[in-house]
Image (cartoon, rainbow, N blue to C red):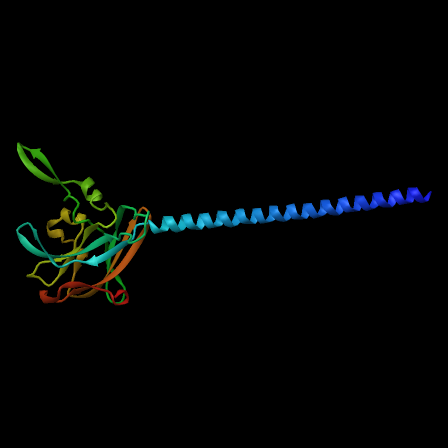
Length: 242
């Protein structure tokens, strides 16, 4: 092989090597760009999901239970003293473009326990501002009042928009007596709501309230003071929630 041919082969090999190195270099750069682009897309997607979940969580209903002042309510002709709670759907403050959602279908239960945490009884809650479960009918040309079972069930549910409150019944007491009585929609089925298993003797009791809605639930504990004297008959915050 002549010297000229060898020289040409050497040049060709050098050119091919340069091309191969160039192609490999460009491929590496492109692979790096693709990798970082892929990684950026993952980070962007994860960040978007986290922000969306955070945004949705900010708008969730936030219910807060508060103790109301003692209320005088007449059951028939008898004046009674009712203990009630207020449920507030707390509004969002100083957060633009986000509003608190309505808490739909709020319902739940109240459990009465002794101080050793033994359950005495449990009952579904009644929202005070729902209609009483009565309907009118005609019997022998007279208008009579009947208990409407559909209204008993309906009175257990209510919607609470943001920054609005609803009241729920807990129990009542006749000032002339030493017992309290748990009160809800079923109480209309019997005179004075005096179901034997809902009579609360004198003493202190834990009141455990659970409220569920379309987007979560809330629980709160209170202390019921039911002394023999009517003077200190009241609800108070339980010690671990003060």
